[in-house]
Length: 286
Length: 319
Image (cartoon, rainbow over all chains, first blue to last red; front, side, top):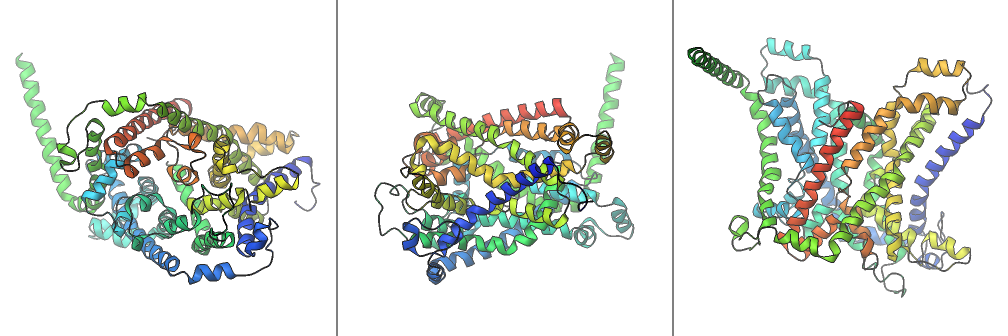
C-alpha cells in the first residue's frame, strides 16, 4: 500500500513534524559530543558546531584518569544496584497484599500509602528525620527515604491484579500459603513487570540529585550526579563578563557531561523496550 | 423504648460477631499482614514521622530542645513570609513558570503522537520513538550542563549564530527576562517524547471502523485526524490537563536550582528553591518549614480540586 499510494500534502506535514522532532532531540547531543572531541582552542574560537574540530580524545583521557570521577561512578553503580534491590522487594511486599480482597483494612492501608504521594512533611521535617535516624552522610540517606515510589507500587499492583485468580486458587488448594504463592507463583509470572520496575527505579536513582545535595557533605559518598555538578558548575556566575582562562576547559566539561550519560546509554535499549509497557500499565489504572 | 433497646442489643451482638469474624479472618491470613509490615514501617518512618515535624512551622526551633520542646510562636513565620517583599515575587515566579509550561507545552506531545500514529513502517516508528524519548532519560545535572554549554556567551552554539548574523553575544543564562522561557522550552524538549507515549496509547484505541468510514466518505488524512482521532482521545487530553492544573504550585526543584545564578534570581527563585536556601543553607528551620507547609497545603487543595473537576468532566480520576 505504501508503495503505490501517491504522497499527499498531509503526508508531507506528518513527515515534517516527525523530522523536526527527531532533529531537535538529536542536535543538542551532537553539540556536546563534538565539543568533547574538539580542542579547547577550536571551541573558544567558536568554530565547533555539530562536528568535532581538531579531533582528539584528550578530554576523555583526563576524565577517565580522574580517580574521584571513577570512584563516584563506581559508587553510584553500587548504590543504584543496592537501591533497586531493596526498592523492588519493598514495592512487591506492598503491592501484593494490597491486591487481596481477603486482606482486611486493605482500603485503609492503600489510603495510607496514597496520601504520602500528595502530602509530605516538607524539606526540613524530612531532613530532621534523616538526621535523627543518624543517616546523614551515609549511603543509607540516599537509599531509605525514597525507597518506595507509591506510583510504581500502584503500577506493580495493577500488574498483579491482571494475573488470573485461578492460578492462585489452585495453589491454595494444593496447600500453599500466602508467602509461598507470592514466591512460587506470582513472582515468576511477573518477570516483565519486575524488569520494568527495576529499570524505572534504576534510572530514578541514577539521575536523582537533590537528596545527595541535601543529605551528603562527605565527598566519599558523592554520587556521580553531585560530582558532575561540581565539575560543570564551577562558578557559572563568572561566565560572561570576563572570560577567565583557568576555568576547567570547555572540552573537559563536555566530556564530563558525556561521561555521565554513558551508563544510561548502555542500558537504554532495554530501558526503552520496557518503559513503554511500564507507562501503559500505569496509564490503564493510574 | 423497649424495642429500641432490643434493637440496640441485637446490633451490639451483631457487631461483636462481626469483630470476632474479622479477627478470625485476619488471623487466617496473618501472612499477608507480615508481608505488608516492612512497607508499612517504611511509610510510617519515612513519611508519617516527618509529618510530626510540621509543628515546627508554628514553633521557634531550638536545636537543644528538639522538635517537641521548642517554644510555640503561632503564625509568626507565616506573617514574616507574607509580609516580606520577596514572598509574592516567589509565589508569582512559581505559578508563572507552571502556567507557562502548561500553556506552551501541552500541545506538542499530542502533535507528536498524532504524527507518529500515522507512521506505518514499524522499524521507522520505533526508531523515531527511541530518539524522541531519549532526552527524558538524561539526568537534570547533565541536562543543565548541556544547556549551559549551548547557551554560553563565549562558546555556545546559539551565540555563534547570533554573532554570525552580526549580533552581539548575549549571556542568556544571566538575563532574568529569559529565564522562564529557557526553563520552559528545555522541559518541553525533555518531556515531549515521553508524554507522547500516553497519547499514542490512547490513539491506538481509536475505532478502526470509524476511521475507515471516514476514509470511504472521502475525508483527507488531516480531516480524519481532526474529526475522528482527536475527539477520540479528548478524555485523555482533558484529564492530563486538569491534573496538571493540580500541580501548578509543584514546580520541579532540581532543574531550577541548577539553572539559578545571582543574575537571574529575580525571576528564577521559586518556593522550593527558597525553602532549601532558607532552611538548609541558612539553617532557619522553622521559617523554611512554614513556607514548605504553605506550599504543601496549597498543592493538596489544588490537587483535590483538580481531581474533583476531572471526575466531573471525564469520569476518570486519580482516586
